[in-house]
Image (cartoon, rainbow, N blue to C red):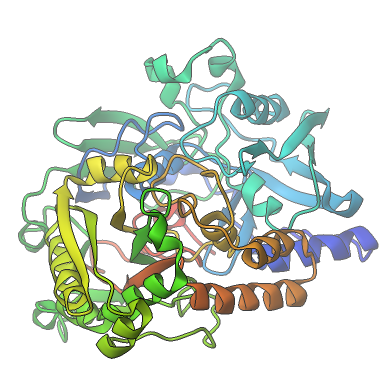
Length: 526
């Protein structure tokens, strides 16, 4: 078993503290000695396709289905399992100088997919390169500033990373960045123009075979020289599917999310297994206070909160499979969830009292999915009764995402994952003026500012005592719920269906909601 806590010392105590307040540092061992030559050469997992971009750190679409394909190809220093952070490319680490220096000990048997040897030079190069060329998912930026000051190579298998401050979130941020090979990228001046197949060479468990953007197809195959846990699946393919349920029943794909309306036909049948995930994917209604300054009035925002029937939306749109979202944003089921936040349910009289007879008209931007259209129509009906008129603007998902990312909207409904991640998400949403990455799910609420929220949101980052940090996060949720800067609508609980006789290795990371996205779903576990 890999033991991160090697010595009982002051340094070790700091490591434990920071691990606990980020994700609960799990030192579970992983099997790195089994031969990948014995990997199952016949088991192919097929999943529903769709175009989510070229799966390297610079070309994938910023939503989860794009990024998590990339992460099967590219490894990171650390990974996550059901409980927390675990060693990965780094087999050990320690934190020194009051959290300002991170020393990672690297594995010495790692190869890139082209056969070249991985070493500390690749790690230093990656973090230096990301400073000047930000990848699609970049957790190393906080309020637009790069957190890493320097990377020092101590020896072939050891690096020291110097950061700009002590911060409770830094181990997670550094650990999840995907490492790229220096021998390939060092001559690339513009990663957006780098279209060679070399740009898809990683050191992860699966290597890139093919991608077709028009058909939305991908194929990855097990890398036989992979350093780590043996692959239980020899290949993963994403294929075109018009009707996922029909395709699953025909055996064309191996995992789907099924509606509560039809789940009964699979229950009590040993051929199938149903797995429910945590509510870490959800919808929220965003206010753009720059475009519509009247939304800076908390009374108008509370009129929205009381004028929308979120329970009805959950039942009619989500078919009851989910939970009404917390107005403090962090959902029930999250280890940092605070149940003492302000609660809002439909109350037209209260809503009318908050706006005192005034009339408003807003444009609501949505995607063109059936769920979002229905959600918008339900909001329109109940808000109209309190004097808030809604004009619905429906566009395709990618257009909506782009408009949200560029703050080109008045009101917007957007659904996304990431609700289970570190509660520093509260700072990113409610107390930041910049986006952390290129995802439409990241970034601030345009035009919103609250000094107390800002102070608390920044304070929690620098609090290294887990209990004290928790107290700040709980207070933040309560304050946010009273302020209503945006309206979390509902979080989904999905029913994932599969045939255990075909494959039974699916798992969920502690902070994520899709089994197919998890790298460990496809690898042997102890």
